[in-house]
Length: 204
Image 1: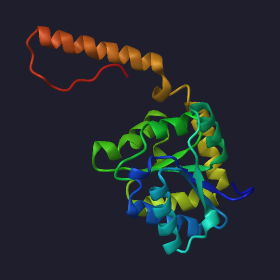
Image 2 (image 1 turned 90 degrees about the horizontal axis):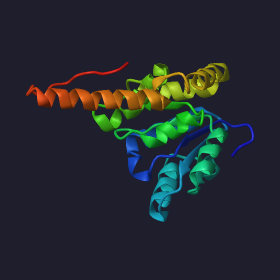
Image 3 (image 1 turned 45 degrees about the vertical axis):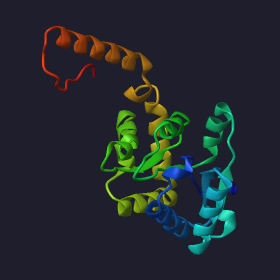
C-alpha cells in the first residue's frame, strides 16, 4: 500500500467484475493521482486478465494490488488500510459489503435493476448512509473521485458509519431475530386461516 496515496478496494469475487465498471475504475484511478486499486486475488487466469485490461488503459502496474486470501479476522482487519470500497454491478457485494461496513470501511455502490444489484443499496440504507448510493455509473464515478479529493467529506462519512454501526438495523441481530420470528408467526396464522398469499410487513 502507498504511504500517502488513496486506496480504493473491491474484495468481491472476480466473476462480479464487469467490464463497464472496471473501465470506470480505471477512469477513477487516472483522476486520482497516487491512488491504487486493491483487489482480491483470484485464479491466475483472472489476475492475468485484470492486469492486461489495466495495462490497456495505461494504468501502471504498481497501481494494482492483489490481496491474497486470509482467515476472516485478518481479512476484516486489513480493511483499515483502505479508504473506499468500490462496489460492482450488475451483481453487488453482498456479504463482502457487510464485512466492509462492519470493519468501518465506506462502500460506494450504484443501484442496479435486479435484486443482485440492489443489495448494497439496501445495506447502506439500513446503516443510515444512503448518500453512498448512486443512480448511474456516471454519478458513481464522480462520487468516487470526489471522496478521494475531499478528505473532510470522507472523514464525516467514516464518523457516521462508526456511530451508526451499532445503533441502526443492519447489525442489530436482536431486532432481526424478533422480526423474523414475528414474520414466521404471521405466515402461520394466515395459513391456518386460509388467507391468500400476499405481501406484509413486520417490526420496524
